[in-house]
Image 1 (cartoon, helix red, strand yellow):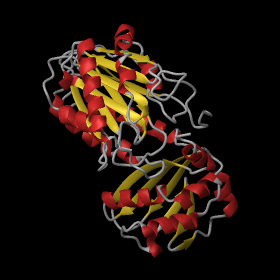
Image 2: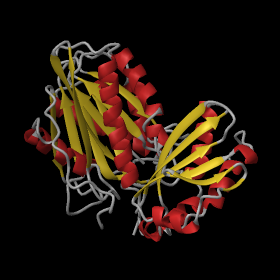
Image 3: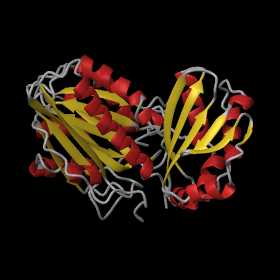
Image 4: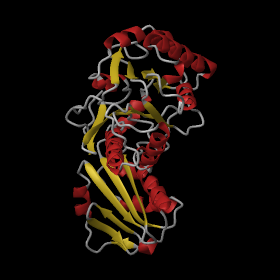
Length: 404
């Protein structure tokens, strides 16, 4: 698959997180020439938090993970993930696959089944060949290493063109606290958890209930503010593991919260930059809305509009499509108070095109890879930011051939 033009130069150097080991293998679930199963094994007393898709057709792994959150933490914990098959819409067969994978992993890693968290991503509606995964669990155990996080990131890719990683370090009470995260996602990306898997690891010390609240709060301003194609997956999973190995209690730490949000936002942006067929990264900032919620509504209306997204792909500064998207959003808007900017360029204001705007100026701006569309509704103090990408023929090609 052709590398996204918005891809970073390379996978970042991620810090080793004490208390976590990784491994990846090929089970040939779908892909024949690459690793497609990864495992992360965490030390005892690791707090596990998770946020999941709100889809009414959630996959068996998602339902199983949701049921296990908040349990005892004294035993080690395991994340086991496969790509190529989502084990979604597979009925009781999908549940059996999860049960058998968890039972086998529990035996190999000597971990209670209640501490095994699985995830699957890929084609919907096909039974998971879980036996192929089970046969590789011993190999995963033999390959465990604290430094194999990049291999894990590559193993969970589907239509991704690059593995995604991000990290941060923050000093709290004179001691370093480290965070490292990986993600996959490229298509079927929209708020309510965006097809996306994200795994974040930290050596911070924090109680599971506190980590759960923090993760949910930060998700709303990061992963739930991205969209590639407005479609919400059956399998979206975001999990965070805090091993406590640093000995630093980060409960109520503003520094840790900021660092964790930074990692989450970095990964969220990488998902958008790897949007299927994407050539443009677009930040949509909405201000002057009646509320923050209405600003978000307007932002999503613009970001999810095929007309807006195709205009951006064609480098056409068609600001009328933005006016259309604001109007159809359902949020409060007033034509004569609306202001639209492309970056710092005032395009429209006071209900009409700006007297200082020229089409040539807008067209030149649209040639950039990183774009900002700013909309001020002029009604209240509501703010919101959404990140998206353009819609190109590449998206059609990838999804038309996805099961072929």
